Structures are given as structure tokens and as C-alpha cells.
Image (tube, rainbow, N blue to C red):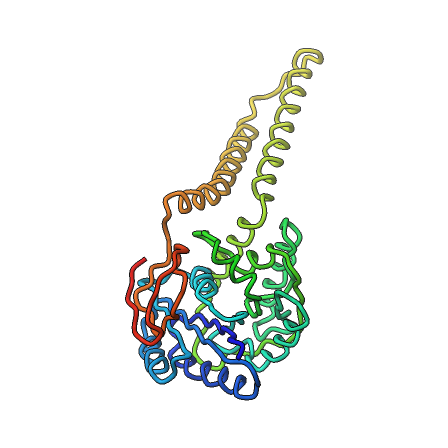
Amino acid sequence: MTVISILIPAYNEEDNVRMAYERVLAVFDKLDGYEPEIIFTDNHSEDRTFEILSEIAGEDPRVRVIRFARNMGYQASVLTAYRSATGACAVQLDCDMQDPPELIPQMLDLWRQGNHVVYGIRRSLPDGPVVAAARRGFYALIDLISNDNLPRNAGEFRLTDRRILDELRRVDDRSPYVRGLISGMGFSQVGFEYDRAARTAGESKFPVRAMLALAVDGLINHSLLPLRLASLISLTVGLSMFLLMIGYLIGKLFFGQDWPAGFATTTILLLLSMTLNAMFLGILGEYVGRIFLQAKNLNQPVVETELNGPVEQLNTSGKQNRADSTQMVERAQ
């Protein structure tokens, strides 16, 4: 029996977690030779999400629940789930079921053909035209500027082979961009198109602010272009100012031009200089901040409670722990 890990991050999803569990089970009831390992990562939900997940884990030992001591953010939650998976491959799903689990058999078919990563390409989105256009524009931009081959219009809905999961266990990143990590590893990767559904219940836990933060993580984690643009603009502006200064000197010394005192020009140049400095310091700050988090080993996911842990697993520090597969494991990392 081949074990397939199903990774489902959740935050305040009390209306969706049981439905997600039941839909995944319904898919595997029709699949011969496969057994699910369903891993819910609860990002310290404030509603009844963990209570419901505890009930499900008590009823079904195939369900594992990892609850964080605080909200660690979506990407850290997802990376912990990948590193905890014990199956021959793992499939990531959103708890709101916008990525239908009924497509798992199609993904397994492509996996059996020798592909290490099978990712869904969003043919249509339930979002409004502005949000949908922004998403597609971001995917196009990050693919254009990244040094890695990041597929366009591909979100979190993907299958990853055991080989990729083993590589992710070695990752020690305090501000991960998981889809970029997986895409950048290479191997054989293939996409398939699907229509993304609307949420089954509840409200989105991914507001515009979170989407902007994800976009910044994607741009900074996979490209040095912002730094190079800052350097290029600085050189361009500096060269322009130098040429303007030479022009003033030539006009004054050789053509006897009596230039008026330019208060407006001086003010504009000062404001331009201050704006550029602030912008470039902000870009540098984003990179330095990530270096700081990594060097100080901060923002590391801390597991408050784990239900139905595997016999042998990796914690977020990459060290192996032993735990009974049916007992509750409470540990601080």
C-alpha cells in the first residue's frame, strides 16, 4: 500500500476542515493501492478549528494535526507540513477546497509517469477581474525576473515526489517562498490546467496585505533584480547630475552665462535625492532583514501540540524524534 501525504494548512477554518477531510477520504476510497496520510497544520486558529481537528484525529489515526504555538504565517506552515510528510509523495491542498481533491488521481497518473512535481495551472479564477489580473501579472513578473524557472499561473496546488520532500527537509529558511523553492530544485516537473473553484464556506484568510507580503517574498527570495535596479538607477541619476553640473560650469566659464539662483531646481534635486535614498534603503532593508532573521535563528515555527505523530519524523530543526503514532505529542522546538 503506497502512502500519499495530503497537506492541508488551516487558520480559522472551522467551517471547512471536516468537509476537506471527508472529500479527501472520498477520493481515496475510489483509489486502489493508495492510503492517505492527512496532515493538517493549524496556524494557531482562534475559532473551533483545532477542536474539530482533534475530534477527527481521535476518530482516524491517519489524520495528523500540527498546531503552532502562534501564527507563523502561511509559508512557514506549509514548509513544516512538507518536512513532516512521510508518504511516497505529498499533495498540497487549500482547506477551503478551491483546489479540488478530485483531481488527485490525475496528479498521481502524471507522477507515475516519472514526474517529480505535478502542479496545477489556474485556467480560470473565481476572484474579481482586478485581483485575477494582479495575480497573473505577478506570476508573469516573477517568472521574468527570477533566476529559477517559476511556472506562470501556478499556485500551491501541487504534488511533490519523495525526493523533493527529502530536499525540503534540508531547507532552513526563516522567510520561505515554498512554491519557488520547489520550482527552483529542478527535476522533472509538469503542469496541468484546471478551473479554480470558489470557497466552499467562510471568508478568505489571505487579504491583500498577505498577498503583497507573499509577492515581496517571491521577488526577494528568487531575484537580485531589486538591488540591481537600485544600483542602475543610482548610477543613472548620478551620471545625469554630473553632466548637468558640467553643463553649468561650461556655460558659466566659457559662455558667460549668468545663471539665476535656482531655488526650485535645488529643491527638486534635494527631494529627488531624499526619495531615491529612502527607496533604496527600503530595498536594502528587506534583504538585510532576512539575513538578520536567518543569522539569529528567529521566526522558527514552534509546535505547541501534535496529534497522531509518525513513528519517526523530522522537527523544524531537522533532528529526528521518536513518538508513539497514536499518542499526543507536546513539544516545543
